[in-house]
Amino acid sequence: METAPPVYSNIELICQGAEARLFRCLYFGHRAILKERFVKTYRHPDLDQTVTLQRLKGEVRLLTRAKQLGIHTPAIYHIDWARRAIIMEDLHEARTVKSVIDQLIQEQNTAKLENLAQQIGTIIARLHQAQIVHGDLTTSNMLLKDNDQLYLIDFGLSAHVTNKAQMLEALAVDLYVLERAIICTHHKAKHFFSNILLAYKSSISDEKLRTLTMNKYEEVRARGRKRSMVG
View (cartoon, rainbow, N blue to C red):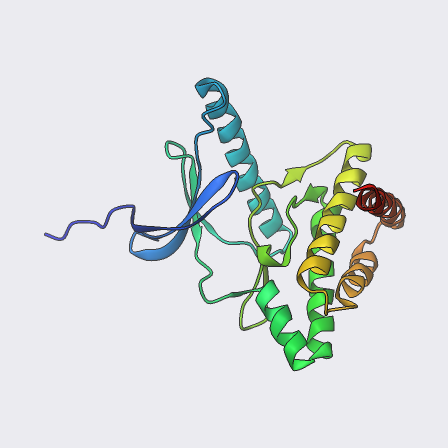
């Protein structure tokens, strides 16, 4: 009689961030990613457990909500509450948008760069209109499949913000974080972020929300420039 494979096996560490470790593994024999939120020893164990499980639930909820909005995100296979981990789809065949942009710059393919920027701006707008902040918008947290499907990953810092003032600030910071990431990583892609912003603005159907968000974004940019000048 054949025995069933373990829930997950062949666990291999990919990387570790400030909040979690990422592993590749096999989940019931299929390739998967295991994201584990590790123990923070500086916190009281009970507090650490409570905070971690709340954040785990929030990440799962917002990944699911983004998918409901028509945004491609990794499929969630299983939540291991004891290990404080999410087991999800391994998009191993996809490339980071960071690497795609670098290649398109090298090829001087401005048409594809513009299309990619438009796709990114549209997806972020869809997320923001649902009052969801990603929290770590970089081109490394976006994946592109061969069929040009764009995936958003790593919702570990994401949040659903309902307070209007806090929401506008959070949306503006989300955009500013992406702008700075693109400037630092893709300085040769001169119009890439401005094309993202054009698509973003045209995709926000609520005119009042669009105006308020862009005004707040300019405020955040001004504060960022001031901090840079002061050092």
